[in-house]
Image (cartoon, rainbow, N blue to C red):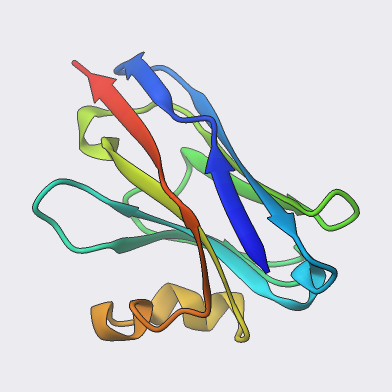
Length: 129
């Protein structure tokens, strides 16, 4: 599976952005998928994940209630709707796919995150105060 993230940009605090991850390959629907982010000087961290059918989702506490993850397997696409953005959301956002569950993706340690099977190139989100 090849992944490509897009949709990042610069917004003011309180604004919204919608990230898109486009996948190629016939097996996209077989994987749980997730969004991770990495701020300057910090480790890559989990943001949100969804199951291979998109019927369940997990969120980091820091984004719960503000971000929504969804997928469209027919179009090989993954989305992240981000609302009420704050400067703390500033980071490079990455989409990822792994042969596990959305719940497991949410619990990955930093070391395990590095071993995720498929990554897309990141897209930068900058939130100004």
